[in-house]
Length: 332
Image (cartoon, rainbow, N blue to C red):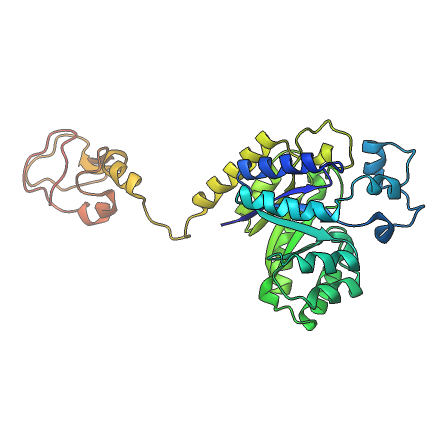
């Protein structure tokens, strides 16, 4: 089954209560994992680092990226409480580290997997530190070309991570991302070139693209979750509210069923319809004993309970052994 990650990210706005609600919404929506972000602003950005354009549009131009992020930090003790809350709601807790201290802290929590964000793909010391604590890795690749992704995979593999424990997420780092910029087929290019499992981290509006990614072979889908898209914060506008997230999960599960095993054969439901929908060879006009069967005196009509039109060439040129009325099924 596709692993579905509800990216709560920083949509808790620094509030533990809001983070609890996001855990509950993710679990009730059918997600497998709810993911947060673990960082200290002073370790992540300089005090004068500018905001991205989408951040300016969603949170204003007056404060720096540092001050915006400072208000979005999760406290150390919040992590323990969130893990406990996730256990209560039977959903996996996951968080992304953005610096060395964050990696060390998340390592101490003994989480099942690592999630590496797109911005760290070219950060070799970061990747090496992750690899020193080997566990399954999900690696987002927004803003990357394929050589950068290959380099990151090689660093992780050299550090001790087996390639079959790495899942690469195709991603477009824009909030919201335009469908014209998604290039979903690149997900399969990554799989072919690097020999890894692939998935998709979505920043488009709506649910169509992540659903399509599953039809193309995504084994992991990540999508931002918020309680209210109109809330103040950098990621809310590019997130799904709980009801829409639940619709995405439901549609993905339907797509998984629809993909099937790839063997072309009639289903049990179709078998019932075969005699109704297929045709039999019947008399197109009166046929008398001894007449030749021809293209003119035979035709094919429903139901399919008689001689199949697959036998057409076997019948033409034979002589009838009895009289037939119009529409009567031909027998051999």
